Length: 619
Image 1 (cartoon, helix red, strand yellow):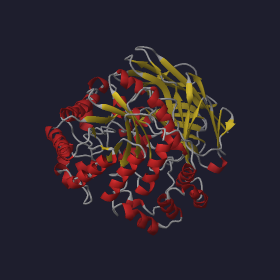
Image 2 (tube, rainbow, N blue to C red):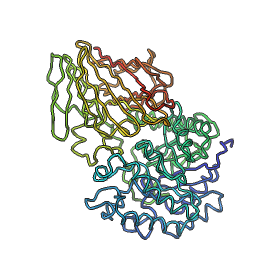
Image 3 (cartoon, one colour):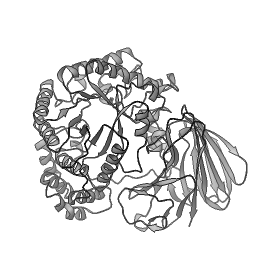
Image 4 (tube, one colour):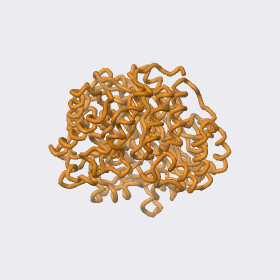
């Protein structure tokens, strides 16, 4: 194998949220990873390791200290390092459900890191895991921390520092014991002030699981003095989409001189899929293109998404001849034979856990939320403003028989866009508010709000509903038509949007301006555009005038203009200002998201960077 010569070449296996591997197959996974050329094996454990301090949160089949020592002996014999994992912050819902005192006086799903009791508990768990493990690296997580509301209020403007300080106590603890702490990157971009506070003893692992133009944020981390590892990923199956992501990630890792590469496999990860995934990843690292196996897995992914019938996917399964366990498992699923699937699964995994419960469940077609209010035909032109309790200000634009809404309090999300009674962008906010637990400013606070939003991305594309979690200020603008300005002040940049509508011209003009307040970050204007598709068989997408026939999610570099034509409306998206690197398109039968990516560049402090787009509707 001609694999890239990274000193750290890891395979990450989600056991806690996927499949509870039996110990003998945990050992087999270690051996196979070593055989395929990986230097490190990283199991994602959460509560699947029976540490005394969190024993009440563990399932009965959690691994014991004796299991772990056996795993380490197998790793040593195989010439691969086994990396311990413990989330010191983030993804702690299993813990907080059983130890609510760690979440603070009001309970919740996340650790209250202001509490000394919580900080002491974290160090106790690390001490206990260090006592039974020998790995030089230690994965401490840190990703996707959904900050408790009271901490968002108490530490407004300093949440990044709060996160970094908590991570640092774990980093210091492990460094004193000769361990190298591994931390996920995403909170450093959500709260860039954390770049100043996070210990340089931590190795930053940058994750991104699709192809893109590049990931220059790796350069940002390196210039800030961090060692870095590039991580790609999949959900157990390395199809064409994930193979392209691996190739892109390896190129970025080599270009930006990371010291390692990590392949992550999340959630849907039974051994039947993982053995093949390790093999195919090692082949992709060696430069191979789409194999017969990735073609078969792509067909299976299209079945899961509702684009091809089971018989079409079944016809492709011959491409999995090298992986008979995987082929048999997927074939049973496509045939609706849950009994056979469970029997195959139980050979390698315990018959319990979050993934086991999904076996036999036919994939449901994800649907965008329905329009929340009945359509009343309007024939006027105007802006109606109302205050609606928790919703805050509601800005409803009407242009004859077209309407849309902007919610400044929720990241300036534009939604409920429709022409006559036909939806273009869904109206998700009402259902979100009914279930929302998290306040503004936290990571993923408004994930389910959706809608159209621009985002000033810091050298890596992230979904805007994850990055922009803050209330915007707004005001009316003069000039032609109807215009509003929405502004947001963050510690690292000032953001300004302008939305303008012209009477009798369906659609809107959107301008976005960012003024960086620091000169050490890359930046580009991106957007997320989740469009509803009522009649997928009669709806057609085209890029720069060329019809799109490929239904798979993929990166389209160099594309500037988009057209989606449905039986009820046609939408043209035309960039009017600012460079465009391309689009990433993702879809289900009921929606499609042509997400624009701008060109990442290192920006100067005080430099105003503007992008503008025209969204034009016609019938």
